[in-house]
Length: 461
Image (cartoon, rainbow, N blue to C red; front, side, top):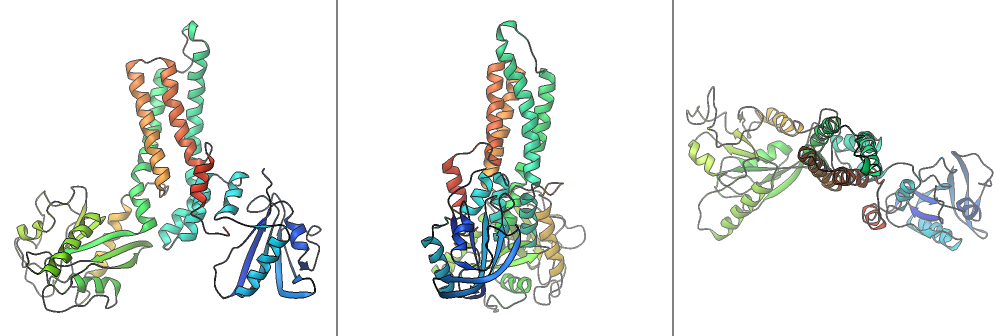
């Protein structure tokens, strides 16, 4: 455990509020706070107790406070820690922080409390990063994922994989010590089966990143269609508010409009776009170009039509879109239009060039609200299908990159086994896989990496 110099910071949000909580942690914390606090001697009280008193500068009372005491190693940082709960006045908070610094503490850097918790072995790097994700969670799904990682779900899986790999690595390394005797401690068939099993565990984690990143950032959904098919009306219906201007004049929307929608705890970024058509209007043309960019950047494209267009006209709107892009056909104005044999009716099944969503097209009336709930359920289903079976989801780009590199090293090891390479080359591939797994959890770490990760945290956490 690393005991470090005392640091202090405001742990609650800045701005005037009912309360402010100032956190102090490190060697000498109790002695520093005792110089300011008039109440019980904090060095003599039990850990995890709360005490009423005043913070004073000499004889001047700054505030009446509650002081919570957490003694090492039973604290978040595993250091002696005090949390001062004061009134939420900016002046009071500044005065208390000033007194703490004057008496030997220094202001904490972003994420320094969590960094100390990691360095002192409170949790691994995945769990430390999950702290920031938990604070930033703005949907039920992102909260659930961050909490699972904070509780060690992802870490346990990676640790189990790494321990098994270390076992085989040690056997291969042992062979190198007996190189002249030509012995094999690591059975090559068992090693091949193990690496294949390891890859079958890592692959779903890699595949879950798109889903995990969408949970974290929000799933971008672009509403694409010809002018006057009801894109803005659909946006308003999904959001249940008049977000976009709706008129009978074609080409009303000239720019992209975006807002947030939560469905079954999943965050969606719904993007209304300008209707795509040939036009000589310079401003409308600029809006159409932005529509195409939004379409290509979105995870899901809602291809909206009203049953009056031909199949070729509708399909032409998404020409050039990547094959893997999810496209959901949505037939609007279902309350007005009669079935179009080219687009609707029973057994509707667009030809193969069209990417499909979850199930057949959805029929709606954006104006009356009919079918909107079914559309929301379909959107949620299109996202949830990407998750892993045990709720372990990769949400961090750094984790994703190292999993890819781990998979690549394991593939090289398998290819080496097939070619009958010697143990020293095989050991090199296994070491590389171990290195990248260790980089994820922080078992292999450097100061630059830690500085980069924790610099993104808020001060006081």
